Image (cartoon, one colour):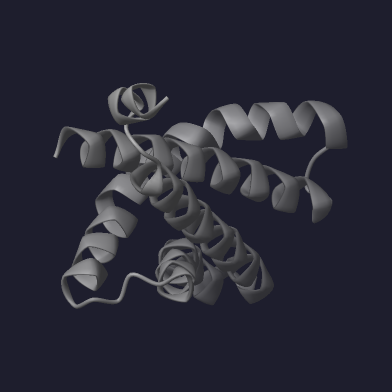
Length: 135
């Protein structure tokens, strides 16, 4: 259980880094801000938001999918897209910037696949005490 919790925490924080970096690049690429300093500032602003959103929405979707045996990479990508697309879509309807919601959904999909990959890698590797005794 402890190893599973550690793997999920590391995967969630790593996925939030990827999501925040993706969102920062999208915001800068759409011409809203100057390029280089804005990526760093947007990353610092978005990373805590991505951690909270991932913990509140993606993490429960991950466990729900896992309970039904849907632990594949494409399920993580779909769940990440839904989480990344959801809130910006609500704003996009009012503001008329639907394409930005799609970019956020894509960032969520990449983040979901990152979460799945890191968690899977950490859970499939042998514990260090087993690896040491095998040598």
